[in-house]
Amino acid sequence: MPPPPVLILHAPGSNRDGDLAHAIRAAGGEPHIVPLSALAQADWRGYAMLALPGGFAHGDALGAGRLFALELRFTFYELLDHFITSGKPVIGICNGFQALVKAGVLPGDPTPSPSPQAERGVATLTFNASGHFECRWVTLAPNPANPSPWLIDLPPIHCPVAHGEGRLLLPEGRTLPEGQVALVYADGNGNPTGDAYPLNPNGSPGGVAGITNGAGNVLGLMPHPEDHIHPHQHPNWTRGHTGGLGIKLFENGLRNF
Amino acid sequence: MKPLETQGWRGFVLSNGINPALGESDPYGMAVSVVDEAIRNAVAVGADPERIAILDNFCWGDPRNPETLGTLVEAARGCHDAALHYGSPFISGKDSLNNEYLGSDGKRHAIPGTLLISAIGIHPDVRNAVTMDLKAAGNKVYLVGEWEPFGQEAGSREQEAGGQPSAVSGHLPEFAPKIYRTLHTAIHAGLVRAAHDLSEGGLAVAAAEMCIGGRLGVTLEIADLHKDHTLALFGETNGCLLVEVAPANALKFEMQFEGLPLTFLGSVTLAAGIVFNRNGMPVLQIPVEDAVRAFRTHL
Image 1 (tube, one colour):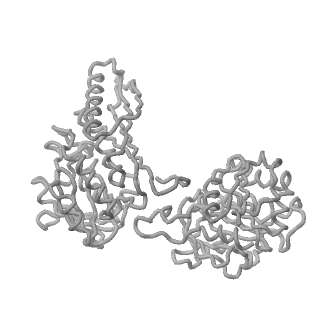
Image 2: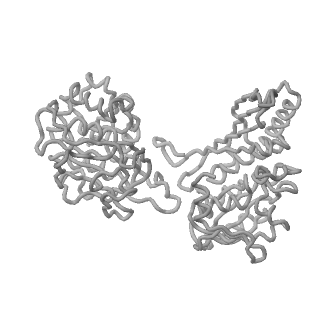
Image 3: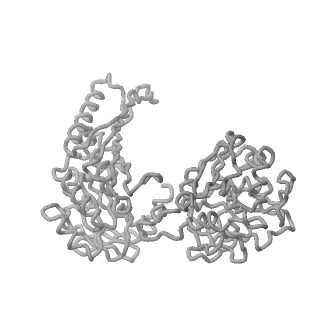
């Protein structure tokens, strides 16, 4: 069977597309990095997965992910709708997650909406509680209450965060359904640590690092599992510590849908 | 560094050497020292000493001043001699002259003539790469290389702290090319847990940096290094490294260095102290956490 083709969207200012492509290739997929400017001509229906990489799309103008989100909602809503409603896997990492949240795709309605153009943003990713950019390694634990195929048999992942706006907030009185929490910040052994800084780098309530939509096919997360695909990428590998690799997450995306 | 998309495990190493304080008294000595330092840094992580190329960056004053031109010539002569000594080609370089400013005394002043040497080397297998942080208590610590601290006064950091410049500064250590090849073989045989060069600040600073990186202590015996323990601790010397070796590999490591200068200095400890002894009596001890604090905070 040929490797499943994966569409990696490149907005002006995306810069983690190369790492993401490497991770997807290592996991058995065939990555295609397509600039938004070339997307109108691309035959995107044949792709098995949609991936939105990290970076600083449009220089974070109007807020991280904001313009990328507007493009997705208004220019490329057909594409977005295709991936969300067909149940194909979609992943947004860091800036890609910010775009999915600000486009209203995540956490989204409990049931898939037929119209991504409809205004339905109920959450935001805002400035870290620490008040500054956080760039260091963290540990992620999967939420056993989330049945998403992205998370099946996923071990704790050790990988970097690099963001200034990663605190997931919902309007007063709203809480995220427990089953949509995908990944939480954890200690080195994979035990969730809730709000405790610095293990939770951004102050997301409950230590939420990543979420899925209600259907479980769209995953967004702030940390970068694509940057820990090989043991020697870990900063302490020469001391014999490598922690959990991120590759299983991408394998799940390619195999479980 | 290992590019993500290359096949196999070959990588490359970037390193550098710089020490403007040495150039104040001896631009030739500075040049040979910083070429050596750049190459030594590359070798310390596992670069093949036969496959290292170097670049020069000169930042100097106005060469129309005869004295400034003289120091530039001396530094260039040092580059020439060092490149031949190590068999490392200069593949490029850059100069920035006329780095002068008008002082409050109304006169023009030149910056200290500063030579930065950058090295790029091939690392045959990044899985064998060695870092400078100490790895485990009980491991042995060796001084590798010809121990010849500069002059009658300790090194450039002490000079900055108000001491006198060294009477004699850096020279090319005769056996360094052979020592670096031997260390390279030992690294790729898996015998080395950590390696770090002795440069600015000498032995004491190199040991402290290794402790800071590994959050471990060391106890080192310095009596045999020099009768003046200030010079033993802070004297700068080219061609030397501190190397951490697991006890099980110590004999093999020592045999590799047979006939070459190698001194056993002591061991890595769990006790969180950086301790230098003279005949078993401490002459300097610093808690590792104090060293960490000094490293992480401003002066």
